[in-house]
Length: 526
Image 1: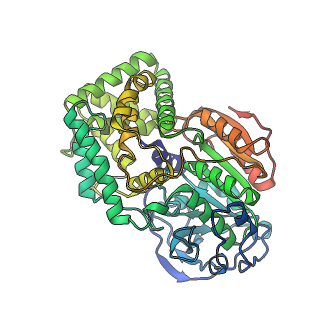
Image 2: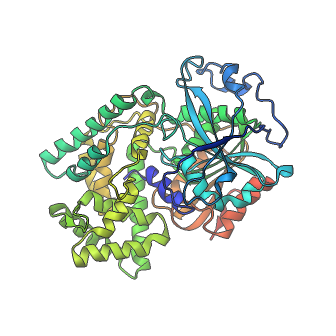
Image 3: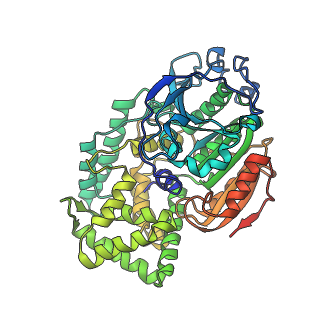
């Protein structure tokens, strides 16, 4: 239940359906880049002096910093919120390994919708919708209608981070292997045999990633993605980076601010990952956040939160003993049921769906509703095909984090996590050991560094009822960015992500991006 991953699907789902999208080239139409002021930009200049801020990384060669993007018209994804003719696609070459900037390169895929008011154009705005592992090339066109006001003066730019989708995406398993694991691996093991299968599955997943994607696997971490952002900024001709990050995208934005503080332009971080939490800390935060959201849901339904949680926990125990049948012939296992319960908690609009699915499971003894929700979360379509977002997410997470908790350590967490959440706690406790166990690549850090002295003001938005990235994490991000840099905005409400969900937060963000109006630190909406 990696909530960073779900943040992509749910966060984009608040704006548009986060389905896979194709970017087929229809015609070549090169367009000039421009500076943040809207003037034609000279991207052939020597490498930016910002690279001096990262002495461990050698300067980039002019062959990379002087790239001119070859924008080509491309088809917007089916169901996208804007006609295909509005979109342009390109790619930017970046070093595979920033320690060897003149060595092998990989391509980062981008998609763009140009600003409508070209006379008042501010520059490019890059988006990351979370994950890690979410495809901005796929998601942005579906979400674009939510950013229509920003699109008046900004080019909206989505990208696939390294290791994701069209940018050398990580692949670890076939659809058949994923389906087999979903059927046979208990993610809350109760016996020695189930524990052994759980551990083997984690090792097999990592081995598959290494076998299929070994070249990029050591180089998909967030610090490399942040360096990609800065190179993209230069190639697009922007003096400063304008950036909108959601969920994991807030960690990427914080990392960028730390590495390149003087290049930080107008930046908003919404649904914020706690930068002070390690792997176990994130699991603890999510157990707290999901339980809080579940209790808010139960209260809204007129139910006692404690009694309702215990009832759902008993349902899960019954499903663990005997999975529920579905019309498709597949069974709803406990692991899939937990995933199905989590999915609609990401937005209050999903609560009626959760009510119907729980009613079906409890009173009819069938699991179709929860299975549909779990499939949506897991990226499985009706034909049994899985997307690879979970592969990229795991690879990026494990490249970032040094933590490799053992089964014994996970087992020791169970009493605490059950107290935090009788429904989600056991799953999240075990997840600490299953996620990066026996991973073939070492992690970079215990926690990401996001201090950004000298950066301009960054809006940090926390929602009090956020299930996946609890509100407290936003407060910690604002503190870590530093005084005068992290500007805290509180959204009193439910759901994962605040922009577009209420006039107060939305107008605050729009005024900041469009007019440079910085709200008072500690602003509260709702």
